[in-house]
Amino acid sequence: MSDDPAPTKIGNVLHPVADIAAAVTFYTEAFGLDTRFVDGNRYAALNAGGITLALAGPTEDVTCGMPAASFKVPDVSAALSAITAAGGTVVRDPEQGPHEVRAVAKDPWGNTVVVYGSR
Image (cartoon, helix red, strand yellow):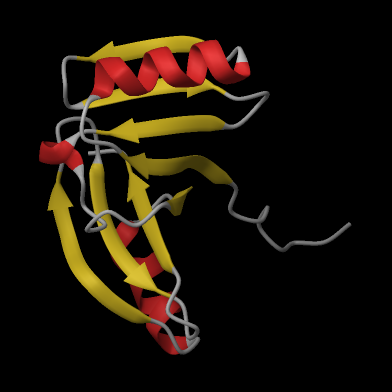
């Protein structure tokens, strides 16, 4: 048995949208996704078969309109250190969001990723 910790899992796939209500309607009608919760016009979480589709309204769009995989990690600062050590770059330093601590980075190929964890 290995002593290596379990690999980090994708917590959600972030999709910035201009209108949460309209986006919830679209994804529930077009794909049959179930709504897990809606936080006004800031954020909505939809069940996409074991993955959460996270709809981020304008005030919660931390990725400048770019869809991104979001990784839930135990320590956001440590995750950013690992990302930069592996060749990625930090786009937004850790900040307190309404539900978690979050940061934005890019992998070496320019793809946006979000790392987030408990407050």
